[in-house]
Length: 313
Image (cartoon, rainbow, N blue to C red; front, side, top):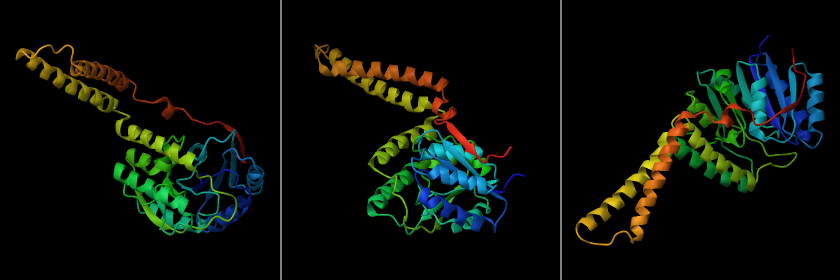
């Protein structure tokens, strides 16, 4: 029987919080509908996998998935999404900062007809070193994409099964899930959710992840705006170069006709030729890219599953 709700929990070195999180989840979900809990180990080096495996053995509605190494949160979520069978899917972090009792609120909003409901940590219980970069990140994403969410990176989210079917996550793309879902034509909204301070373990956030996120932001812009029309980006840039170079050469040609010579020794002459040549090359590249619009990173998975414990036939 297909469950109504799938809970996907990616984790990395969270052995101290997994059992408590699972207890809280079961307490909430037992009052709702048929459910499954999918725990995805993203290459933990502590006893997290042993805890997750034991939970899967003890609870028939729980599945534990272990990736062969640390592929990142996006890959762990993708593995969980591929395993999820529920009509509705909810994600939350394993550090106990996302209270499971907020799940009914997300599902109620989802039932209003939305395809994706993202949590908004109004009173975020994190240090300033995490809140400030996150606030800047959210403002940049809002202004760039036009999607008016306050908190793109909240781990507490709900989806319809259809909304995640076409998602392929890798790198740091979990930060941009609302953008990706919206680009596929699904509706996106958010609701305020509670947030708790971290009790166990330590945050996986750092400057390195911020740099990766910035690079993936460029990827998101390219994928959502130009994936199906690369000629608009590459060819458009080439066309601009051709126009500027052509204008320079036209100006020099007018000077030559007026008797202002020589023009062949002017740096401006070589700049005009260079811009035209580069522009023509970019136009050609854009035409080729237009024929190959499906990137290999979109079609292939960026991780491998090492073990699945508790999977049903």
